[in-house]
Length: 176
Image (tube, rainbow, N blue to C red; front, side, top):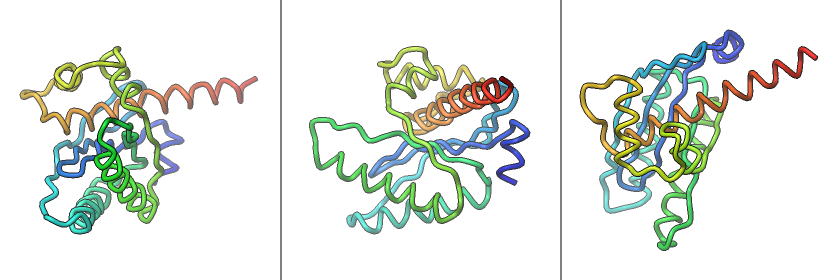
C-alpha cells in the first residue's frame, strides 16, 4: 500500500510535534497539490516516571499508525534552547517516535522548527498564534486547534510541501 500510494502521488502523512508532557499529532492526505486533514489532536503523557510517559507515547503511536495507516511520518527536530534537560527529554521522545515508526515500517522524515513555521505561515519565526491561525485557515476548521495539535498540522504540511517538491524535481531529472 505504501509504495503504491506514493507512486500514485497520493500519500498519508502523520505529523508529530514531540513533547515530554503533551505531544501533538496530525494526519493529512496529500495528492495533486491538495491536502485533506484526516485527524489531529494531542496526547497527554501522564506519569511521574519518564519511562512510563515514553511507553504511553509509543502505545498511542501504535494505535494511530495501525488505525490510520500513514505512509510516512514527519517529526519536528529538537532544538537546543537554554534548558539542556528539556532538550534531552525531547530527544528521548523523538527516539521513541522514530523507533515506533521504524518497528511498524513507516518512512521517517524530520524538519527544523523554522522550516515547519515557514511552510505553513511563510515566516520562519512565526509565533505559536500565527501557526494556530494558519492551521485553522488552511483546513477551514471551526475552532482554533490547540498549540501542540497546530504544530503537528504544520509538521505534516511542511512534509507534504517538501516531499511533493522533491518528487517533482526527481521526476524532472529522470525525464532528461
